[in-house]
Amino acid sequence: MTISAAVQSSTGGGDLLPSREARLAYRSGKAGSTAGVAKGFVQGNLAILPEKFAGSFHRFCQLNPKPCPIIGMSDVGDPRIPSLGLDLDIRTDVPRYRVWRDGEVIEEPTDVKAHWRDDLVAFVLGCSFSFEEALLAEGLPIRHIEHDIRVPMYRTNVACQSAGPFAGPMVVSMRPFKPAQAIRAVQITTRFPSVHGAPVHLGHPHSIGIKDIAKPDYGDPVPVEADEIPVFWACGVTPQAVIAAAKVPFAITHAPGLMLVTDLKNRDLAVL
Amino acid sequence: MTISAAVQSSTGGGDLLPSREARLAYRSGKAGSTAGVAKGFVQGNLAILPEKFAGSFHRFCQLNPKPCPIIGMSDVGDPRIPSLGLDLDIRTDVPRYRVWRDGEVIEEPTDVKAHWRDDLVAFVLGCSFSFEEALLAEGLPIRHIEHDIRVPMYRTNVACQSAGPFAGPMVVSMRPFKPAQAIRAVQITTRFPSVHGAPVHLGHPHSIGIKDIAKPDYGDPVPVEADEIPVFWACGVTPQAVIAAAKVPFAITHAPGLMLVTDLKNRDLAVL
Image (cartoon, rainbow over all chains, first blue to last red):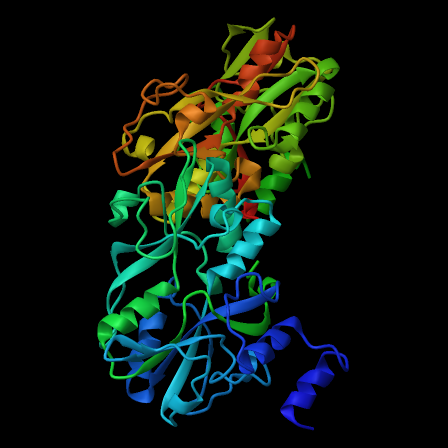
């Protein structure tokens, strides 16, 4: 039985998992934001680096688990990550990639087969879509989702622990909540350490180097009402910013918002 | 074997539990704040009511578990609460009591043997000393403890659910923290629902009807620095305020800060 047939069979003979269905569509060239795709399934940030830099990057993630929670890794040169999907092919299954040379994006292809090398290591890192699903399930409103825009993200003055060439500030995402909701949001996201976990900050943006909450460094601004508190989570844009700053000769990431859809279930990431 | 001998024996033959030692001292007339007494042991707020009002008060606690978490109750007319201490006598073991008639304190004796009646029911409610111990154990500084003053407490505009004659606003206590500490404090106190649990509010005092954070309704003011967030927990003063407001013909409570010391361990209250 091929791996593909095994996965097919494991889903009960015929029906595809929505996550696998999404990956197959992306594999055949479809692109577009994965927000709301395959609800209930974990999506991940992608970073692919040559083995020469993979050790340092792995250590960077280990040292900075809140912005860089590893949920899957490939073997050197192997495009498969069976723990995230038996048939998953990291060269083709992300809707759109960014190919980096010396810290610059040189291409945004829908597959990276032409760029694959046998010294590459793929890292998949947890993403806020998972905890947002948990917040929504508990009835907490999420402003940027209500407005159908991207979450606002900010570079902070909080330095990540550095490792080899990888260093830089933590990037955070912000969601405004009323105080009682903010407390509930801390509780809910604490249950999900592998997708950024509890917030890293709330209430005093200037304390972490954010000068103007209305001017995010990435994503779109959202209003914070007078009776609300801005709540900040470590963000998966951090590793991408750090890879850019390190100006490594070669790297591949996902394009922002176009994530890897895995066969893991968000609910299975809850630690309690 | 008498109950007293059984407790004695259960402690390993000779050594008194520090909690029991404290109760015996209070029983023999000693009075004074129980802050820092019998570290590690649960202390409780006390409310004693005639059976006629006990049903409504019990329902009030049930409806408002954050300010009124019940950790023990006596049978009608029975001064013992064996679940909190095998030899515990609720008429004598609190350092100082308040005796209430029609909503007024008429006496603050060190025992209430002369006031005991066979229709009285005693309620013991969780107290913030327990979660403060947990916060300190995790390295969080507590401002009013550092200053050796009482925690600031405030009447809010948040109405408790009413039950019979018992109604009124929730009273909250406030501890200022830096944002990351506030997040940690939410996590830690969430583990202790029977001693007020997670905060009920943070960051916007005016949203819950607190006009001036420097002017608490009970306790002492503490400074909140510019980079800090005031964090508010439901407070065990709430039931005492509600009993006063209800002007029930007769009630007994502890005197503020002079709590019932029980044989329960704070660590055993953690739900996770």
